[in-house]
Image 1 (tube, helix red, strand yellow):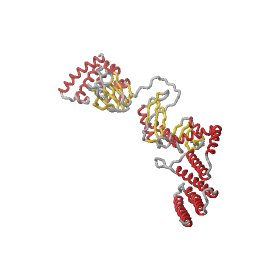
Image 2 (cartoon, helix red, strand yellow):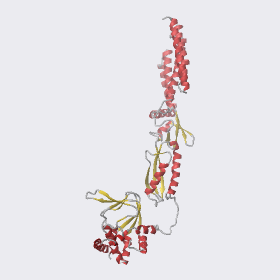
Image 3 (cartoon, one colour):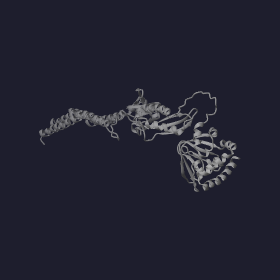
Image 4 (cartoon, one colour):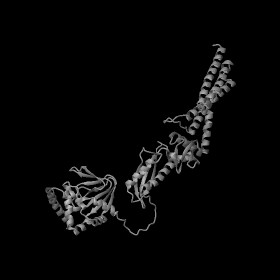
Length: 499
């Protein structure tokens, strides 16, 4: 090939590549892409130096040992390494994570990448361009490294821990971490330290050697979901299941709280002044954890007031009566007045019976009476629902009835002391009035005819009659059957109460 034709090809190729890279630079400028700087370096310095090298070598005929040609080759390597470092740095900075969002590459790894590229380029220039033996240089570097290693032990400790942190990747820039007693957001990682910005907007520089010795907690990994726990005390007078329902409703209405994993409320301790409940919920916006906790704790107070719950605090109080006040007599009287077996009682007797009765509360799933056990009390439901179940020969229970407010159970145990014929379990929080044998015994002694009336009412209910007037209007043969059955029941009542 003619020399002039070869040189023309070099110049034409340079013009063509320059035009293509100019178009690429304009495209990158329009998109504000970080690679536009390194591409400009390739278009300008690298291509122009390469053209001068080719013209000098093939046009002027310089040999490979010519000093001028070595200088041009050295410049070409220098500009090429600069462009490679820029491309590698900006490509790492612009990488995307698994979730598709841009992530920042650790500064320490970028520094290592730049150093490796520069060292490789320097070795190639010294050995390939200037034909120098690297063995002596490597020996000198080895001796110097030993001296520097002894003098810079602490610095090298930070560097090595930094490299280990980089490889293990326990956290990244932008994560919220806790190191010892320090909590903050990672804003930079370098050779010597990690820079953390605290909630107080202070910058804290933590040496890498400290990170290697302290326990590290990353609130942003493996997922952004982070659990928060609060222990709140409520009065011993507040039913635990009601407290749990109120706290769960507050958690679910708090902005920023995740529904998956679901929040939970547990009873954790019976403390000196209160029953303590642990509330645990998850959030995925840790920088807002203080605002979310503040909103939750503020809403707890208002919810407690609305629902009649008491958040106690240590106080010193003097009680004139050591026993708690009895349950509302009026409420018990209203409940007992609706029970058919107590219809024969006059107002005075009903008031005395109501004052002697007991009011009890049961939680969801608790068993009130057990089938087959002896009993001497009946129950009237004030609030809640209960299940009546019967166990068969295989001890498998089946539900036979559901009782709600105003309904009752256990009247035969109260009147005759016979074993329970079924088990009764609370479906939800249950409040009942309990009438014991002792409360009724004095009335039966004072009114001998009262036992007869009660026996007839119980027997009438067995015959399907729901009220006293139904008994008075029943057919003669039905009334005779009731009288006969009531006579047998009356005998059992008298024996049980010793009449």
